[in-house]
Length: 434
Image (tube, rainbow, N blue to C red; front, top):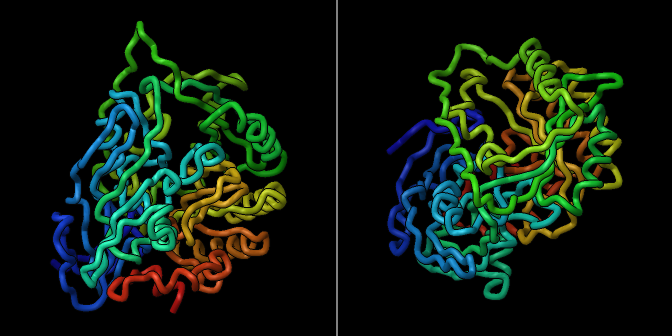
């Protein structure tokens, strides 16, 4: 089936043939041109697109194979969603070891992008908790890869953007929890210095730390925001967590983006002042804590028909404070602010993949409405700042970084290249390497 597709950012467009994969035991189908595995399409840029080629849609590989409730070891097919895992294991006292900001990602996609979460300083990336995976190549060969068995193929596949072959199944080590509750604190901070002080003071005692910042603020309020720190809470024997409310949904794509300088400033001001006290305490179900946007179906439509561009970077610890100040100043001065501006610190837990993005330092993630050349010019300026600081940009959230910067950010790309399946490619890989 030929279909015009797009990523979650709705930019860029790609014309590609879709083939559904539902039997992990079968060989890969023969395709004309190149193929690329595709999970649930929650990557923001073109790493999940294959313009002019074929997508191997693996969401139908959705079976659980084995789960040991005593050890928390789960084996499942690669198309299983994180949401489906949580539904199975949380009632039995287990939780995902690492989760990104949406639960609607597949296990295969999480491995291929080596996703991270709010607990990187404690747990590292998702790939660190993958005990093994099965990799199916276009020549029909299969490899069971782990840190001990075919470790070179494991390192290439974790964070390998789906290019080394189709991940058919994986075995994951979950982590114990007492229940679905979270407990912690919410702090309002006045500037970027306040964020770094809170982050440093929180890393030892809190597993999950993250901040929202106001990218439209300037002057003495530059980088003001809300810092959240939390842990899994003990069980509450006398009460039950309130079930998450019914999902809202954006019913259609508006003709223009609803995110503009006026709405951004209004939203950011209201959000910053919604908590009157400087410190608040929270006890809440894990869903709104980890996945606030999952409660709004098709939220990506609010950016209008041209979509949006996600930009996530990381800069080393020695340059974090001054580089983040420069980035936020540049964004505020441009008038292109983001209302989904997330700032946190990565720890020094090493990532297992050759192309894994997380590394020690501060990481900033932003959404920009796609306004064409104006937005692209801003992102080019941010690239210059990040590259000069020795940082990197996240491929899973990129739709436009120049190839020279990708190669600068990920010097292991040449060591990775021999592991690419000769029949596999992606719009992203061609863009940054050719």
